[in-house]
Amino acid sequence: MAGCNGDCEHCASAEGCESKNVKAVLNDQSHIKKIICVLSGKGGVGKTFVTSSLAVYLNRAGLSVGILDADFTGPSIPKSFGIKDKAYGENNLIYPLESKGGIKVMSVNCLLEDETDPVVWRGPLFGGLLKQFYGDVLWGDLDVLLIDMPPGTSDMALNVFQLLPVDEMIMVTSPQDLVNLIVTKALKMSKMLNIHTLGVIENMSYLECPKCQEHISVFGESHLEEFAKANDLDVLARLPIKPENTKLVDMGKVESILLPEIQECVDKIIKEVK
Figure 1 (cartoon, helix red, strand yellow):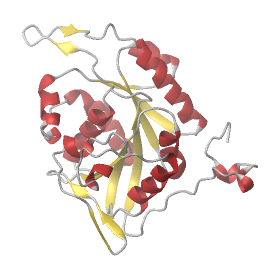
Figure 2 (cartoon, one colour; figure 1 turned 90 degrees about the vertical axis):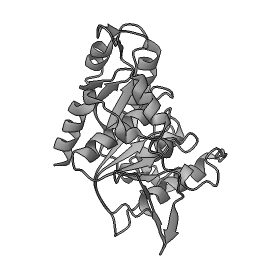
Figure 3 (cartoon, one colour; figure 1 turned 135 degrees about the horizontal axis):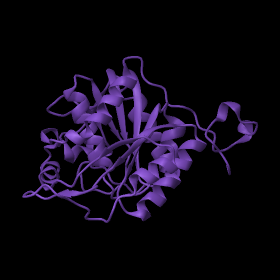
Figure 4 (cartoon, one colour; figure 1 turned 180 degrees about the horizontal axis):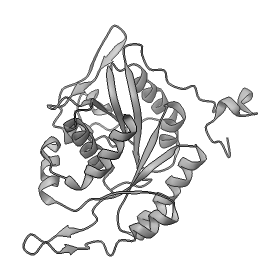
């Protein structure tokens, strides 16, 4: 419905609303302390890289971490972790796959016979799959479940916010003004749905010269501080362009990355969980 904020419980029109959503229910063998979405509103800014990196550093800090890959038409979390096995079900539950470091992962690519097969579905089917990925997966006891969000502010993203009990959101942006414009749209959507934003991470912020360590603004000068101030956001991290990390992700070795710039954000999440 027009102007819907996802709060069916307090909506006067909920009784006859065709778009009324029922929250997904977690199975009784799983418990999740905190659910955090990683969103940008636009593709190509590095949501998956940020999600994977946060998971790696949270895992190194001793937290139990899971990733729900909600980008059903462009899933890439399994490839980042070098996961090639397929998920299986037993006793009405789906068993997630695990990375070498013990991070639990559920993605549509864990179900496809060939990871290059496209998922050509209409919108309502994605909502049902999302509920299964949350409620029917044996997540066990997790400190944090990170959700790698689909791009945009359409029904795909809306499904996550309306169907899952999301606690926090982290926005990912890059130095281009165009990206900031679109990210602002996603922020406004989150406010409409009463989802708290933990802060913003700027990816591809700069390239560090290997000889003199000068920071080179490949995509132009950053306006992150102004953007954050205008939207009342905390700056969580500025992530540099590191070709070596890109290579590790392509090789499925994201758990080998070194990205100390993300530590402050990780510390903030740990504080939220505890």
